[in-house]
Amino acid sequence: MTWNTEQTEWSMSYRKALHLFLQQGSEASLAPSAPLGEKAAALGLETLDMALFHEKVLIPIVSPITSPTDRNALIEQATCFFMEVMVPVEKTHRGAVKSELRVAQLTEILRKRTKETDESNRRLTQSIALRQAAEETLRKNETSRNGEIKQSGRLQSRLRKQAHTLLAAQEDERRSISLALQNETAQTLCGILIRLLSLNQSVCNSEASLQKGIDTAQHLMKKSMRRVNEL
Image 1: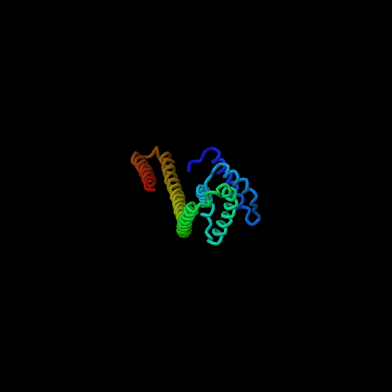
Image 2: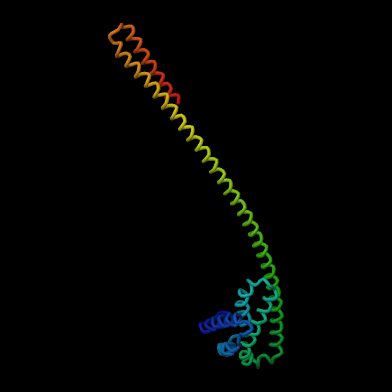
């Protein structure tokens, strides 16, 4: 059915009223159903069109409900609202309903709709079961993933500690080498200084003694440079 502007406005009012009626539960009032029924009759809406629209509005409401008992109770409550809305509509169609052909047609339509509703409920139940199974699988995967994340965190913590220990050992080794280098260099430079002072005292002595002192100082300098390079 193609809805015109007024019929579309009526469908929005019906949807809103049905939602409010179902939310109120046992305290819900059927008072809003009468004006909706009178408006539907004035707009010339047919029973089948209204039944199809009612089902279209109801399916998204009951689909998230996993309990069959709660779902059936909600469907029965919605049916009561729909039947009250249909009262003014059926009054305007009473003459046509008296026709045996019309009665047979409506009976067949209702039988088909009942069969389709049962099939829809069956598919809905299967869909809910599949969704629950998928949610359970997701929960298991999430648990496994959380375990892997925790294990990875523990491994990273151990690696950080090992890296810290290695860096500390390397730093200790560098300090030890630096101290050894300083000590040896200081000792060598001290030896060179002493040798130079000795040369200063013996500068007036023989040329052989002077050359020997110079050779000794060069030897100490080369030894110091070689040791620095090694470290």
